[in-house]
Every structure is written in C-alpha cells, then in structure tokens.
Length: 195
Image (cartoon, rainbow, N blue to C red; front, side):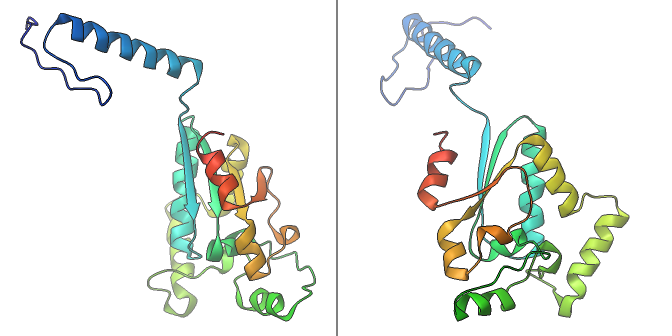
C-alpha cells in the first residue's frame, strides 16, 4: 500500500500534525529520539507496587507479579504498608516492645507470611492450608521460594516507616532479605519514579 499526502497521522499533544510527508518525517524523528532514550536506559522498564493487604492470596499475587517482572528484566520495587507488613515479620525475631500499643499489635498481628489469613474463604485457618497444599501439589512456587527468586534478581522491598511506627513493628523484626529497607511514602514515590 503506497503512502500518500492524504494519510492522517495522530496529533501530538504539543505539536499537532497536519497532512503531508513533512509531518511523517517529524514523527519519524520523534520516534528515533524515543528509541535513543530507551537504548541509553533513560526510559526504564520497571514495576513499582504498593502491597497493603495482609491476606495470603494478595501477598502471593504481589510476589507472582514481582518474580514475573524481574524474570522479564524489569527493575522491581515493592512497598509494604499497613497490614502487609505482617508478611515481612520474621517469626523467629521478637524484639521487646517498649509501649503497650506496640505489644498489643505485636500480639494480634500475624508474625510472618505463613500465618497470614485468606481474604476470602479463610474457613478458620483451613483456607491458607488448602491453598498451600494445592500450590505444592501443582508445583507452584511458595512465598519462601519467590522471596529467594526476588532476592537473586534484585527485587527491592521497602517497609513503610509510618505504618511500622503506628503498628509497633521495628526494623529489627523484619525478615532477613538481601534487598530490604525501610522508607516513607515520599521516598518510595521518588524511587518508583526512577529517582
């Protein structure tokens, strides 16, 4: 199919195109410039996600996305906040809480991903056991295995400082993971934007 001067090219938000070969040439220049940015790494292939649910199925979904994105060569940043912080608590670590509210949260919140409830069909604890059994039987990766994959692929995990302080979760009780840290929402947004 031959191109003619009557071909309509979609307008740019900054420079509307008109009909003609000059407009096609200008579009080709813009495309070339964008390709150059991608080649230089100015436009990163990345995934940044907020994990805020403390439900097993939702944390599993977050790790499936993280491992898939990292396996595809994407830079991945995960920000765990509020109830999701329970998934990052190490059951073997139990630092002393200085205030009564921190002790209460520490007692009430699940300690580690193996204690997380399901968001649906929890069934008094049978739901998480059933999903883990089915995943194992079908040879799907567990959260422990996905954490290991994430660690090998450089997935960064950030625990929200504000949520940690509210819930009395100290940085010392977080899981041992090679790329874990704590930060506030503003810092995570800067990281998520590539800063």
